Length: 560
Image 1 (cartoon, helix red, strand yellow):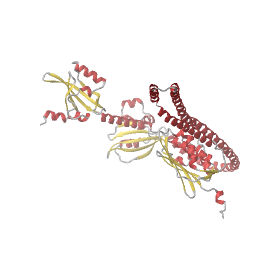
Image 2: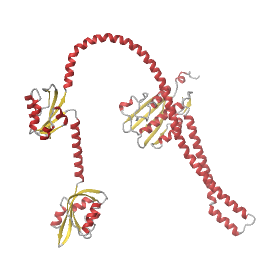
Image 3: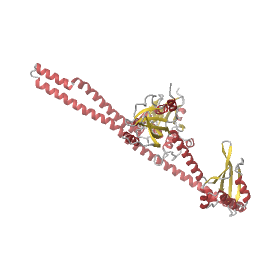
Image 4: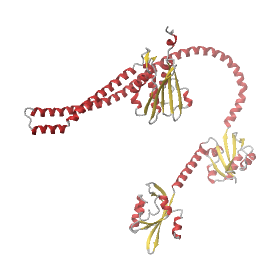
């Protein structure tokens, strides 16, 4: 049967540990301590207290205890190490107790981690409320149901010219009298301030004796279903009131001025027509300047990609160089074997023959014969990658080529991917879902420029690492190529403007806003369209649709 003392300990709300001071061994622990720290019921007895209290401050304290220096502790904050290694914030007390003539230390601790979180959250909320009260544009006064002032902001005391001395005295009656004596209808103001438990929201104008006009709005303050006070908000509308009065005075004068201005506007209309003609000429010049900027952006992009291509070239060249070095080492070993053969070829004895066999085993001649072929194959493959990268860069750089030719969109997309790979490989995994589209008559190098802008924009939209999916397909009328990313998406209010020249959502210096405008123009030149769908936080999809047959193809007579 459980003793009454043990029953009382296990139902205590605090952790309780009884420590033997010479060995610092825990001789008794209640159920709350085991459960809170995550130990089995019989695990804590036999452990040392420093297994639980391991901070430097606690270690010093318990070392003093071991040396016979006992000191009570009241309400000290500390850290307890749980069975899973987690640290628990506690408030603890330590008392020296006597047991049959021997001292023992009774440790009582309480978990305050949740309390600390609640206190921090409450403090943050109060701080936000105080900041909100002070940052509002109105003077705020709060009076409780007993008629006492519970809060006001600095703007309120400034509006009502309440002195610092009066505020420091916290003489609420004097403060309220100071407010009422400044209002022309002091009695009505006093009655309103006293009606703190009124459930009606009010709005009224207060005219002050010094000529100012305040707008006063008040509403009840509830705690649950009970009214515990009233909140008054004061807005100084003196300037607005004076402006309204001045507006009424000037309305008649304005009507006269309108008549005068009508004649002036008629003359201005004639000037506007002339200005319109001049603006049309400026727009034409602006279009020419835009084309020049587009060309500049294209060249800048190609220059940037050239650096990426150089980076890609370094990789195959690196392992080609390494393999050729290894090949040279292998050949040197084989030359050593040949030299040994030459030295004994005139008379082979059993001993010499065995020496040659040992040398062949040391040099692993069979492995060398097999690996030489593999090394050469890898070297040739590396050189082919270099040639392919350079070829793709050469094809891609011909963006000013205007001649139409039959081309497959997937081929152009693959070529562009190789060129921009250095921009993509650290940001996204690229997944291809091609639909084996037929060739169409187009300007492939210009479409490559469109693909490049879509791929780079997709990479820039991905903040850390994501996925870019490239799809293609076709039907009887159109062929389409689609680029989907898992980036941050485009805000709905920006979707209608992304193809406008100079519009960009990127940071200053990160983009000119001409990439999608250029892509839009190229696709329009091919009688196609660009469709976009996007969801903020999930990504965007850009689809380029092109007709399978040009207008010239449609107008050709059918063959007999």
